[in-house]
Length: 288
Image (cartoon, rainbow, N blue to C red; front, side, top):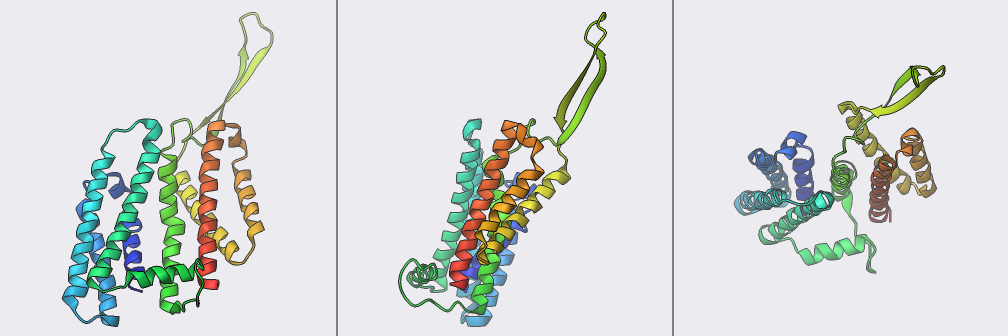
């Protein structure tokens, strides 16, 4: 319960309380971001204190201070590394590695604090995880209602916001050519030459992307992953293919553009792959 609650508090502060403006200029808004983390971590540890705590100073105040301080250090290092100049070809993979490494370090810092201050046995936790995932033989642990709900909340955030952010970093920003929405510009009744009797009719395709289109795309991504997870939990693996087909049909005309098609397929396949992984993990852990 302790680790799950702290991880949930971290995810809420990192992916719900942190706005796009804060992400775009993290150096400027780092202090505000740390305040968000202080609030969520403090509230989580306070809940734990009332449930199973004995010393407020060592089990709430000090862990909060250490976790937030470590978070600030990790984010500061990440900001410095992001300022490092990299080639355009490697920019996406570089930012993706920073994102994954950043999140792993935050989780590790939470584990270390739990071990040092709250006396959580990490060996038992690791064994519990292996049993839950059925990676080792043994009696399946009873998760309990609270742990199951916390785990569901964490998986929900991973399936929606975290995965959406990861895919966004992996694909990078849309180029001017791809960040366009389908439209048409037609030139008609143009003479081929001054003496020509036939007219020429040409049709050009151009695209204009609106902010609303990006927002809708993000929501669609959330819904498609949640739907895939639900289908996996129900055992309807074959139905996942229909979602892929339905999504592809909505972009059928744009598939003529090879760049767009590759961009679309990479994002879609990554989204579905991670959703399937989440669904399988939930099915194994909660449903056996």
